[in-house]
Length: 111
Length: 111
Image 1: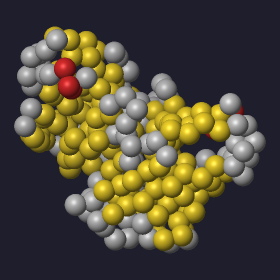
Image 2: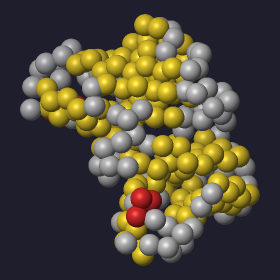
Image 3: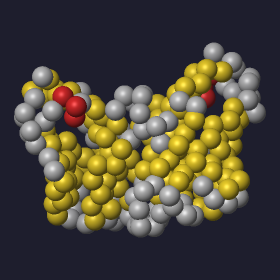
Image 4: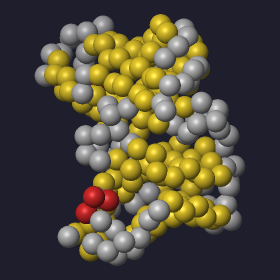
């Protein structure tokens, strides 16, 4: 079983829709969870950083962590064509431990 | 605020030639520094990380090496490039209190 699993997509949704991106993981010790957005030919950009279970909201983005199910989600409201990118989830046990990345989900927002 | 610079953005090199990619971080002291390679469909592969000047840990035995001559400078090198060294190379930094941030990467093509 892979440590972090993420559907590669591509996921295509119409502009304005709510997008749900997800990752599952196997290591119950993970405590810190991140979402990165990566545009083509660019480095990943940190979007959300959360600790333990619960929700965190930042503008149109909401990160959700369900540690009991080992499942994390990123929701994008009012999606825009500029949200078209690859989204990577990432997680780690402690702040100074190695980060484990998902392989990313390609998202296309259709105008 | 912190910034990370990586150069060059694109590089085309012949097989057997040497390589030097440079990364510098501004706005923070004593960061942890990382080199990743990202291949299509294979996610981010951690190559090297450094917790301080002259301290390098290798994750994957290969044709590459890394050095950290100054606190905020990280260099990826090779004496003789192989075709399999082609890829997208990313530098990243973090600290105990700040999550990982990436540079914009170098796209390396070996001919």
